[in-house]
Length: 351
Image 1 (cartoon, rainbow, N blue to C red):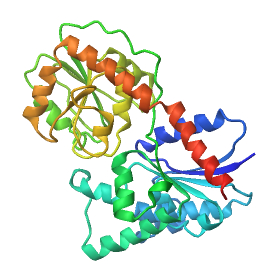
Image 2 (image 1 turned 45 degrees about the vertical axis):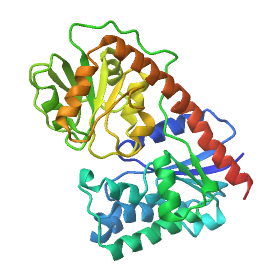
Image 3 (image 1 turned 60 degrees about the vertical axis):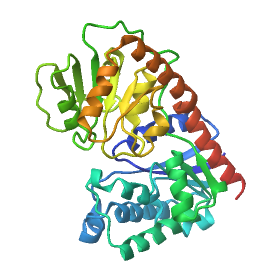
């Protein structure tokens, strides 16, 4: 029976990815698994020191290496999600083959830095950072890239051998068929985004001002309700969120900066057409004009025009059906998690 260790960032949307991966592992009695979820808050006196407390990459890498070093039973393969947890485990991956999964490289994130309020350091510091990250990436026996956007960066920016990269997007549960929707008098839109401003929520509120639509907003940010706009405090995976997907007519996420937002494929699985922006890997998820519409980030008028275009029930229905079909084909969690485990088996067998 192969024994695998899974080191996962327990932050933001990565929690959903880990939960679905755990379900796939639990369904396979031939796998023995150890899980090391890395939560964001500092733990212990060491992580409370200033250099670690303020740097998640260093803190998660130190914690991951310490936890793996304490694990005494033999392991056949290691799995890291994401690369930030693997930065100090290059030596370990010489002895135990490692798989690194990532939704974005640091250079991918630098490309959308302004939206994340992420500061790109000077040229010398960025080169040093790229060397450290590249060392860990090249030590891995295989890499799981969530998108072509990530794969291109791994090859072009970090010199990773293309033969070791597997494009396996994160997935979601896909129902056999989406809910049957009866168009109401006013289209009902849904927005889901914890960081309201970065996800384009403010632009969305401006865009729907004066439109004959209802808007449900799910966020942890402080947003004031107004006529036609309802704000929900809902945890990821909550049945309430599923109900909101089912009763909506379209999903809108005009995000300013993102990698592979999980809520997009959740909405598509529910048979919703999606309005979003061509940032990160979103164009690989939402096919503009087929499964939804892509608008310029921060462009209120472009977003408003897209919402008005989806006032047509027939267009919403056709795009929603195409969205469900695309998720079934490319983003099924059970299928994609099994593909990840197959990669783990391959690197373990080739040890």
